[in-house]
Every structure is written in C-alpha cells, then in structure tokens.
Length: 131
Image 1 (cartoon, helix red, strand yellow):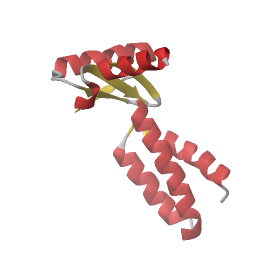
Image 2: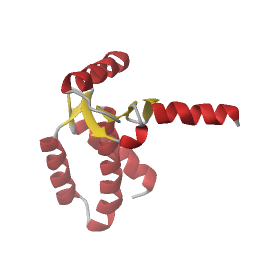
Image 3: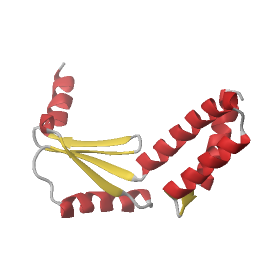
C-alpha cells in the first residue's frame, strides 16, 4: 500500500470512527479489529500509522489545550473553551496545564492554531520588533 493510499484509507476509517463529530473509542477499537482481520501484516503498519495520525489530529481539533502561568479555575477554562467553540462552530473541551515559563496569562492551542496571550509571548514579540 502506497503512503497516499494509506492516507486516503485512513481518512475513510476516521469518518467511521466519529459520532457527532467526536472520536469514539469503541468505534476506533472496532476499526482496528476489522483492519487486523482484513489486511496482511505488511500492509497494516503504514495504514495504522496513517490512521493513528488522523485520529490524533481529530482529537487535537476538539481540545483547547490551555497553558497557564498562574491559577486557572475550571470556570475560566470552560469559558475559554466556550469562546473557541463559538468561534470555530464545533464543541471544544478544555485541557489545562500549568506552565510557569509563561510568566502571566495563557496560551491556547486548538488543533494547529495557537493563541498566545502570555506575558512571555508579548515580550518575545516586542524583542523581535525592536531587533
């Protein structure tokens, strides 16, 4: 199986793994089980890699990874995720992680998009503008 064919098949398999736009673990398990029965071992590895990448990207699209410098309440995390849900038109769930290197503020990653509202990010942008 060529890499392009594996990616194409992985997209189709990802569609089977979704329910209401969300990756469902039981469906992922069923897809993997069906793949193991259908494909010989030499074809399975590239297909599983492509499928794993597709599943990871889809899961990342549904999460707002919030890095914060100070305390962040659950309500604030939900409000941030709610903002991104409204802006993107799909449900986004918050995943918070403390990062003291930010100094103050927060950085949010949803899929490949990053919104940096941290003090360290602002200082970095200021330093680049002065160079």
